Length: 300
Image 1 (cartoon, rainbow, N blue to C red):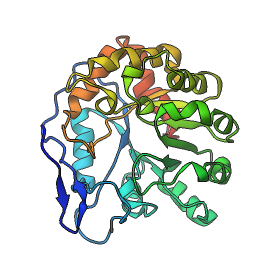
Image 2 (image 1 turned 180 degrees about the horizontal axis):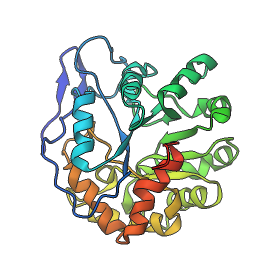
Image 3 (image 1 turned 60 degrees about the vertical axis):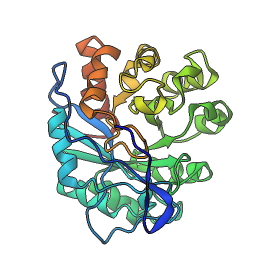
C-alpha cells in the first residue's frame, strides 16, 4: 500500500503514519512453542499519553488489544515491546501493558540519564530488560548518554539497544567495546543492504556479535531493502548474520511498522525467516532459545 503522507492537524510539519494491514499471511513453517517477537510497539488509543513535540512522525493507535491479537495471529507465544520514540521517556503505557501480561511480555525502555534507581527497579519489576538509544527518529535518547546509562543498568543485568545506521559503527567501536553491558543492534543495522556484507559497517556489526557478546535483531527488512515487498535483496545479508552468529540473533516484526509509505504484510515478514534460516533447529534458536536468554523469560 502506497500513499502520500498526510500530516498531523495539530502540527502540519509532522507526517501521520499508515496503519498496519488487517490481514496477516499465515505461517509458512511450524512456529515452535515459546517463539518470541522481540520488536513491536504499542500506542494508546485515547487521551492521557501525550506525544512529544520533537517526534518525527505521528503514529495511529496501536493499543494493547491489537498488539496481542497480532502476536496470536503470528503464532508467537511471547513478545517484547520497545518504547516508541513518540512518547520520549514517558514509558507509562508500555509499562502498563507489561504489568498486565507478566508471563508473556518483556520491554525495552527509554530513560533520561538522571533517572532514579527506584524508577529503574520499578521498570525491572514490570518486565523491562533493556534501554534504547535512538539516533534516527526524534524523541529518542542519543549516544551521549550511552556510557552513563550502561553503568546505571549493569547491576540489573539489562542490555543497551541501538537504533542506528551500521555505517556509524566503525567510528563508535572503541566506545561500544568498553560498555559494561551487551548491546543489541536494531533492524540488522538499519542500513541499506546495497552496502554489501563486505562493508565496514557490516564487518563491525559481526565483530560485536562474535567477539563482544552483542546481539542483533532480524527485523525491519523493509527498512533496508530496495525491493517491495519480497525484500529478496535482504536474504544474503540476513543469512550472513545467521552464519556468523546464530546464537546472538533474535527475530522481530517491527509492528505496527511506523514512518513508511508502503505497508508490509506482517505475516509475510515472519515467513522470510524460513528462507533466511532453512534449518528448523536454527530457527528455534532465533525464535525461542536466544530471546529466552536475552530477555530473561522463564524456562518453558
